[in-house]
Length: 542
Image 1 (cartoon, rainbow, N blue to C red):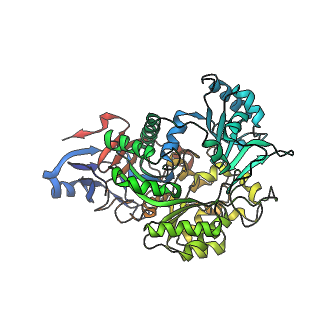
Image 2 (spheres, rainbow, N blue to C red):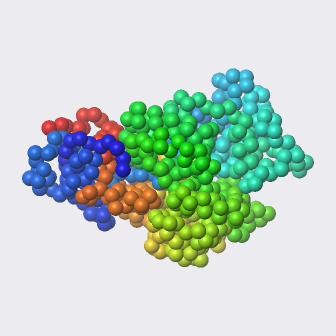
Image 3 (spheres, helix red, strand yellow):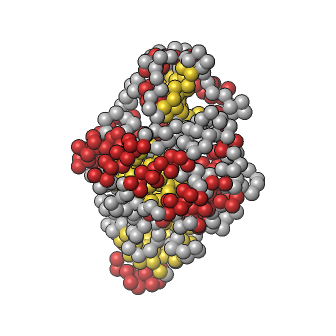
């Protein structure tokens, strides 16, 4: 359990309080003590029962309280990097991206790397992907490495390729592709593990940088009403203790209140085991082994059972051979760990299911992350396993309509098929995959309920897969709790549960869908303590 928590008895009242126990279920007031919900009921009932123990009241002033929202899949430090680095994700033309890169380059030293996050050619009318020589001109000789929004494709210029030792003779690494021109020369576009060759040439960031990125990220998430997040950070910043030291600084020394659940990438596991006992931190817990099964739809690296509709020469990329995947899962079982496998394409999902059946979990639930494309057969197979699906509703808003071109009309009804999955009784949790997508949970709830981009006016993409508001919000409350086997003490407002709450200025159940995104967070409350407050004037102590 998490350390810390409230040392006073707090009564929350005078608002609309949704328990999420069932659709529309509400209570009038909640009494919290030592980080847990003691009881729900009317204000008068709770005063009678706990009057002498109520040392503080929080008047919700008519605002609307939910169980604490939790993002079930993101990269906390990576999201902080997006906030403090050059962010390319909102750019809508190649010209805009070029201008931003040139301006950033002029602020750097002669040999300093030009790094950018989140380019997305699908936002450009011409779908332009920069060539290494164009990046050479933009950077004026500096090495360049730019991550695509999916983080499964990267762009490097000639200097970066040279520092990485990548030439026309360099073979494609396992699980990766070096894009080449007709003469066999690398173009600068690198898919999946091919980018690792360049990443290794990038100088390590400082410990202070990692600390700042993590703290910036967590504070931003708290401002959006998120009380926690399931994250994966431990294999991207050199030795595993570097990101762990950032967690120690932010969560133990700076006393930030936010519930972080860390997946452990398989490449970091051995080193993590050696130092784990030195990093038992407040509000931080460690979970499943993370494994990548394939890439993403955007770069056509998600592994499909049949070729891409708009590129029939490829079916995507698989990261691990069958026996290698089995060995990784067996290693997890020996450590008594569940697994969390990134599977976007249906073939990656199928191979993962087949391997889990050979080596099932010893307890708890495994996690299939994204499950971007399913089928009736795969759904039946999933139902036989002890798994949850970790879905990202925001992908609907970002991937449609171009995903129809990628997959073709026959497969598209099975893309991000949230309605079907829930109807089949499969547990789903909701996340953003930040920094790949915006982290605001309201965007995910909107996309799950409306199946379209904000501002669009149509019935939605594959509208039969829409979720109700209750189901959409449930992805981020009881769904995220179930993802880590904690649905019996998190994710609802009920007696004995963690006192984690998200309070908005309007009712997410009743506002028109296009007003949902205008909701503002009033409070973010972690174990009974206010971790974010829109206005300090709203708390009254008695």
